[in-house]
Amino acid sequence: MNEKALAVAMRHGALKARIDEQRRILAQQVAPLESALARGDAALRGVDWLKHHPAAIGLAVAAVVIVRPKAAWRWGKRAFLVWRGWQAIRNKLRAAS
Image 1 (tube, rainbow, N blue to C red):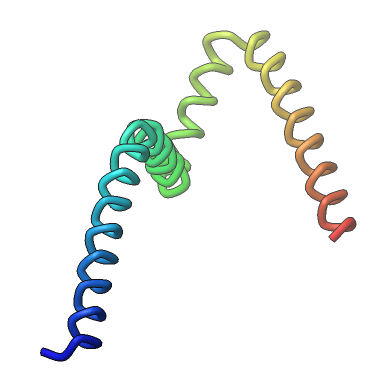
Image 2 (cartoon, one colour):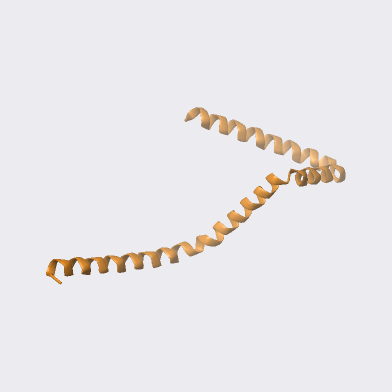
């Protein structure tokens, strides 16, 4: 093997070792995030389930209205205000972009 090819092979080996070390360090640094991301994924699966089962939401709301109508009315007003606030913010952001 000539000198130039040997230098290239050595450089290639050094770079591969450096990449392997960087991957190992990255895996260590990302490990704490995995549990947080797993919880987020679980929450999104729950939201997805609710989107596909609207009757479950309707039954839950009906049960709350029957059992505690005053509390349901109070939470309904709060939910409406949050929803309107979200719409206003979303519309402002869309207009700004």
